Length: 271
Image (tube, rainbow, N blue to C red):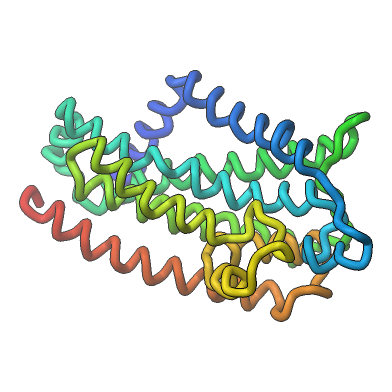
C-alpha cells in the first residue's frame, strides 16, 4: 500500500504545482487580511483592559495575526472535498478507484496533500506577520515571550493537528456527497459557526460571557491559544499549552475516527 500511497500523493502535489493560479490566490487572500483587516482594526483598549482584551498580546494586530494562522488552517481546507466532487463529475475519481490502489491509499493521498497546503500556508502567514513588524508604517506580530524549542514544537503541533482535523472532515464530506452546491452548503454550515464561535479574530475580552465559555471548547481556539500563549506568555491563560494541545488532539482523534468509519462504508463497493 505504501507504494500506491506515495504515487497517488505525488500526483496530488503535481496537480497543485500545475495550478499556479490557485497558489497565487491562496497566498493573496491572507496577505489582504493581514494588510487591510488587521491593520485597519488595530486599535488599543484602555491600558488597564489591554491584558484582558487581548489575553497578553501587546496590541490587536499581534492577537489577530496569531488568530489568522488558525483561520487559514481551516479555510484553506474547504476546497479539498470540492476537488473530490469535481473529480467524480469528470470520472477521475472513479478511474482512480478502479486501479489496484486500496481505498486507504486513495483517501490517504488526498488527505496528506490536502493537509500539507494549509500547514504551509499557516507558516507563510506567520512569517509574513513577523516580517511586517520590520516594515515602516506597518504593525507586525510582536512576539513578547521567549520562544524556545518546546514552544516551537507546540506551535507546530497545534497547526498540524488543526489542519489535519479539518482536512479530514471536509475530505470525508466530499467523498460522501456528489453535488457541489450541496457540498458548499454543508461545509459553510460547519465552517462559519466554528469560526465565529472561536477567538481567532474577535478580541476575547469583548465577547459576552457565554461566548467566552463556548470558545474555550472550540478546536480553533484551542490551537490559537497555544500560539498566543507561546508568543505572549501564559499570564492570562488558565492552562498550559500542553492542556490545549491535549484538547485539540482529542478533537482530532474523534473526528478522524468518525471519518475513517464513514469513508470505509462509502468506498466499500469497489474494494
